[in-house]
Image (cartoon, rainbow, N blue to C red; front, side, top):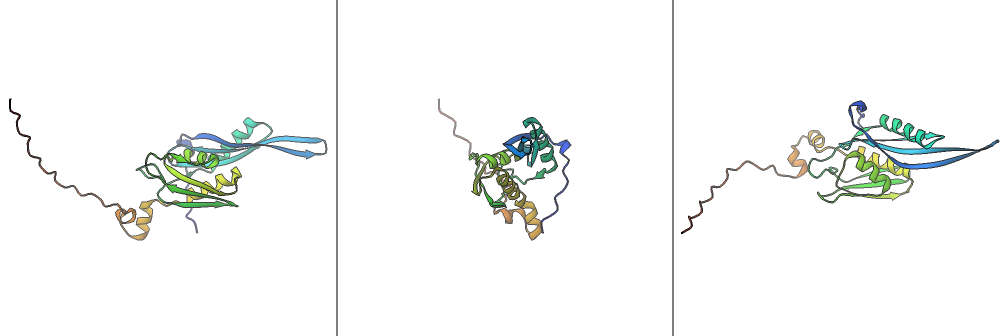
Length: 192
């Protein structure tokens, strides 16, 4: 069972929206054709909060506005490492036939991702990551699979607490002890 998602106050966040895809939808009715638009939108503050939403309307601007409102209702927290601004571990997210693999990357790698995945990752504020989208290329399902992968991420502090270990044991990084600095011999005076 997945942990309950805590409520996030979106009013305090500085959310920026990004349109992932806009589809023109035509519905055939008795009197002719009804034309409308659907927009898939991702919002994020660039510091670990991200959400997605979809809006449908007769005009593109209205569809985007509705998508932003829906996305603000679905904002979630993503654990990001301080060093390197990447994900803590490798994870795979699934939705329908879409599957997205997220792998941590070293500093300076950048965001290696395709369109819909890149939109979610950059909105969340992750700067170094390797991704691979497997299965369907449908933007809606790829975005949902990416958010699913981000929700599956576990913060190292939480894992250490659950296992009853220290953070250094979990991450495999030895904490450096403060050693007294060795006194270097003074350089010999230069002869004039």
